[in-house]
Length: 268
Image 1: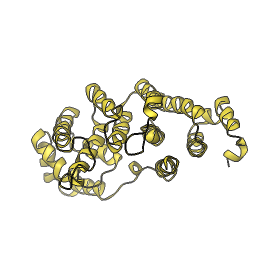
Image 2: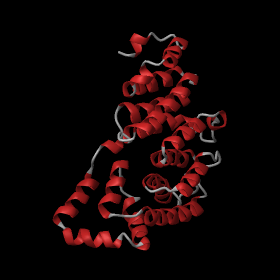
Image 3: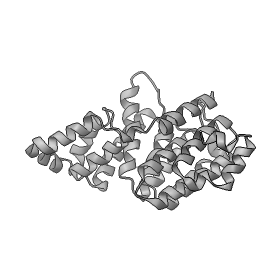
Image 4: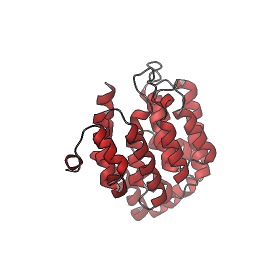
């Protein structure tokens, strides 16, 4: 079961492409407002400086409709929303929804997707505005084995999106320690989704060579120790396509030999 879940996750995130690379109706709507409804657009830019109004828009719109990672940044940039304002609004929502759900994905019928979904998406939105204190908060979610896997997974993505190069290296290394590999009550461990989140981070930070290097270095260490051959093959292929240094590294060659995989076969 673990092998199947990890395989699906890696393939969907890393091989077929990330959702953050696609533009959907939300971006089209933002562009339409900016170009053809200039007065309304200017009015919204002013409104979203107000924490209460921004929080209400999050609750009624941004945390209800599907919004990609790239579109989160587009929204923030187009409307000039500050990190502080966005953080205040999101953390208010997180505190309120967490109090109702107690970090359980399906606490009761009344606390189903509407509440849990807002909490999940609010955590994900922290990836475009988290400060040092908020990154500590996110790491606390990730490392709490009592919390539901879905919340922890979103916290990993949000943390890595805002982390600098050294934080990225430290975090990915931390995510692959033995205690983070412990399987939680729903049958998953944090390490199951780290590969996909880290590869997505790599693709999103094309203008940050140092952070990309940190992703490659830390994933290389993890892959050398990876015991699941199917997982290794999938992640190795994607990472080798992105990093020539990794593809030609002696560590990779040793790992291929450990699984008895010919290098030329892997590169096909």
